[in-house]
Image (cartoon, one colour):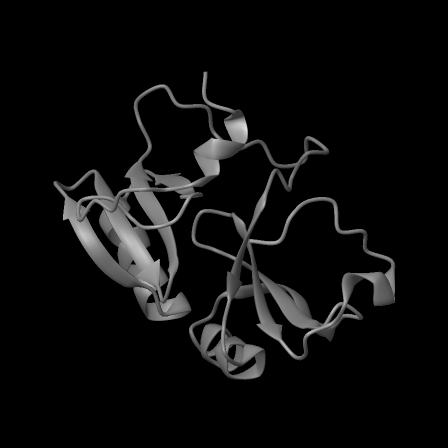
Length: 156
């Protein structure tokens, strides 16, 4: 039997699927409106359209899928104490430039840019569906031990 860690090795590429090992899928009632919003506001490119119910989006080497919210799907529950179920993080070249564009497009900024001891500058914004996105810029290469991090596995 193959060791579960062997599953980390992606051995094939498929032109019909996004590259990468983690590919978030965000669901919307109006896929086309979501694709337009992500393209215009966050700077994503629509890589592949699958009918009118699904699209693959890319930003450099980052990928995610916009999918149609299916019939009887649970709606997000705000005010439940679990408002933030996840945040998608995307690396950009310049957080300030990206933030200026996002705010000019009218997106709701949840947290303004902040520099962190681990060498990243980040801000948070809400997307068209209420999902939280964290945009991050690497400021410097910092040894995790310098700020209290503990490396637990092999670096890849």
